[in-house]
Length: 348
Image (cartoon, rainbow, N blue to C red; front, side):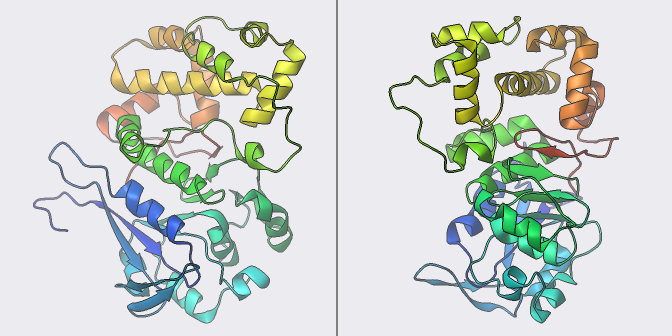
């Protein structure tokens, strides 16, 4: 990939390990391979590398891959992504890196953004990158992961966690959520939403992993809460009470709250706040409305209330967020976030 002038796409290196899941390997290529700028130039360059010299890498399917790059490629990356593998060996069984994996990771430059999909988090944890940090992994593996790596702050309830320069996602398809989040963080919601639209996936998924954990099956005769959510999304600028949402499903507040948590993994109040934060983000990026106007349109009422909620969810103020995504620069370091919350950041 060659471009004239000073433009250089953000380079994403995907580390392909033996026993990898082809679906997860394909996620970064699909999501990061789509965004382009106004001149139709790719905003990302995605390359696949192995811990060994170029050659064969086995998958968990009935085919192998020829990977064209060796571990030295990691030294050229702005972001390194590690998908899950079913053959992590000592990494999974003992929490330690193999010699070839340790040598490969030694090529990663300080300051490189690191991310894992599903149990790729074992590699980051075994390398010490997650010590003292929040992280997630597939919900079915979370307890084991916590026992093996007690220094990691494991949260099994979210789809992904962004801790600035280190990001982790839950299992399998949550890798899509994570990669879309990184696109959004790098280039804004409009670019990420366009990628999601082309990929035919939602820009955000409501809730976290809790909705996927096996639990007793709800009575199929009971209504879902989808109607109430659609009703609320059309009225974010208005005051919305829990009883109003419950009324849309003809449920008591208690029943509605229980059903909502079963389906979304979070409370109605938490969900409503997330939707209002997203609405505020869109308005800050795409309009010249004043802070008071954005606050009213997104349902926060006052600019002060909006500031408090965006600071908590995004780690930055509304003013800083608007400046970041309207100029392509940022002045505040990303904070922590999980699930569908977002941080801001600057692409390398």
